[in-house]
Length: 121
Image 1 (cartoon, rainbow, N blue to C red):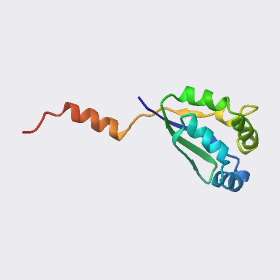
Image 2: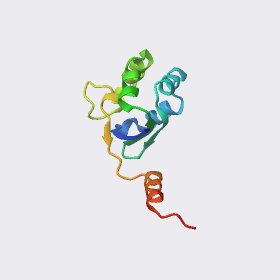
Image 3: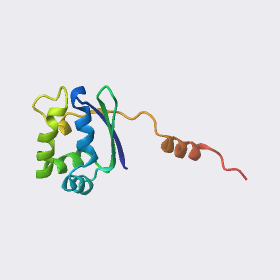
Image 4: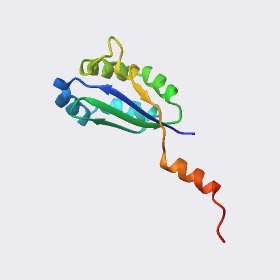
């Protein structure tokens, strides 16, 4: 079963423009590493107050994170991005995700409802 993962981080307000610029042109090697390690349908959303919301789909989130941790490009990217975030201490941003549990998914509930409905003749 595919996992849908949502997480938050806090970007420093004085770094918002630079954060956007960096993500407008992510290194091709980093993009390939994410794709190769199972980070699918991955998006980031950034509000004006610095709230960063990430969303991805994967077969196994823990495995995808471990696989990225083994990539040298990820270590370089995380080191460059660390100064953009608040409250991560010495950790890399990808080790500081505040994962938010999913409470609703339309397609899952539709599929469950269709199983319960009697067939119409």
